[in-house]
Amino acid sequence: MFTGIVEAVGVITEVADFDGGTRLVIESPEVTDGLEVGDSIAVQGACLTATDIADGRFTIGLVSETLRRTSLGRFTPSDRVNLERAMPASGRFDGHIVQGHVDGVGTVRQVMFEGEGRRLTIECPSDLVRYVVEKGSITVDGVSLTVASLDGDGFDVALIPHTLAVTTMGALESSSRVNLEVDILAKYVERLMTETHR
Image 1 (spheres, rainbow, N blue to C red):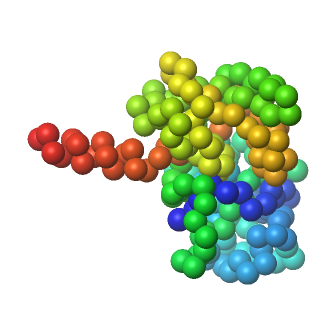
Image 2: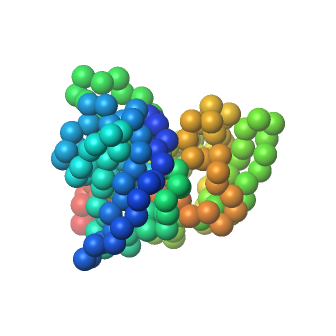
């Protein structure tokens, strides 16, 4: 489980295809300290497995399912990615409950500058809109954010200067594709309500 509080921004140093997928090597000494082979790590909000760790870098494999459901297939060497190691049982819970299971890919429709902060309007896949509520939680590229408002087939989020400085959110522009994970509680409630009314 994750919290959507980004620990570090890593840099992709290598992209290589293998039969059925793509392998990424990511440099981030901040997260490789204590990371072990087999550990889960969220990369742009997607829960992945570290398969090799050396010299401040770790390797992950992206199979076809991951490439199909996330924006990770677009990355090239020197691109930056948000990283978060799985939360330890003794860790402090912050952000909100994040599984690292990307529900879909959204598109940034508009970027508005508000003083030192920014407001993004993100177009959301039609099958996910029903899970997004004003002042509720949503994960965008691995970052736990509060929905500022709803906008038809999308939503707005407000980004404070700190978030812009310590994540990749500051690099987003109109037409950028972002990984989205809706609040798991909303999906459980829907499932329970559906079962109750059968």
